[in-house]
Image 1 (cartoon, rainbow, N blue to C red):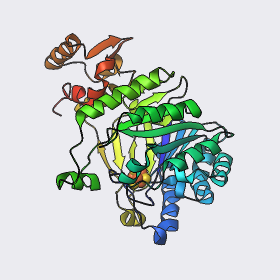
Image 2 (image 1 turned 180 degrees about the vertical axis):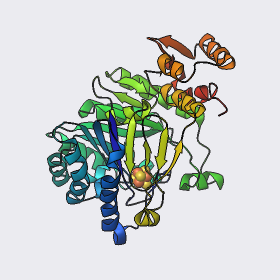
Image 3 (image 1 turned 45 degrees about the horizontal axis):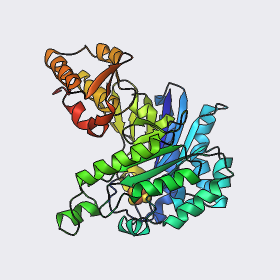
Length: 369
Ligand code: SF4
């Protein structure tokens, strides 16, 4: 199985913490870029040979596109998948949840919305430089009620000045609306962001690790008591509602990424990535650069992605990559003794208490490459 990702590199404003690829001044080349995206789809779709089971419109802010523009981007992929029902996700900013958009999105076959709620605190939303306020989220979620979309929300915790209200707000939303999936991320300070600049120049305090760990456990506890499964470090789902598209990334399946900055993977060893610059993407003839992952790099990715999920790392894949070397076997045994990793159904998984340290633990099993 495989997925298609379409990156829309436009946003209305620049959020304080964001390092994704996007532009806020795009009016002059919006139409040309969408046409280039369609062209890229037609040129590259042959790269995917497995059946498509998900389409993901991400960004950026894809919900700022008109329904006609979204329809034109989906036309090619929908012809390609024919009558099959596949997961079609649209990333949405709360201010775009209008009656007109919702009915148009449904008519286009979009069946899953991933809504960038982030927080229900207006002061924090202003601090993040988000374009919406809590009332937009409430209004939008109210309008959503009669529609059959599968609804996921994104939350950010560990924000300076954020109190444990992060959990109160979450509970209030979950108890009121039919939310089936939650992605909850700790705020990170990425280079080249306004947040990074402010911290470096002493205008903001350093992010507080202790606060982030406390919030993480509060969110986890709140969601598990409401029947959500914690299936990836940052992701929780009601039974049967896990994200198919993101699941493919974590399980090493193939995906075709279209648009500036998008990445693709052939499901085996070849990675491709597009230029992260809108002007250059518009001129692009050779769509991507690529690398073939060495066996050691595949090994590292296996641990990095596998340990982040409930399913862990399958022993069979370890065998395919030549099995453990002596020093890796020793490290694994030490991690099992420290109760950080356990064996379950022929897989190595992180114990629940150590999910937040997933990346640091996988690095201990890395090969130098
Ligand atoms: S809306 Fe999303 S992609 Fe755009 S700047 Fe904000 S966080 Fe980044």
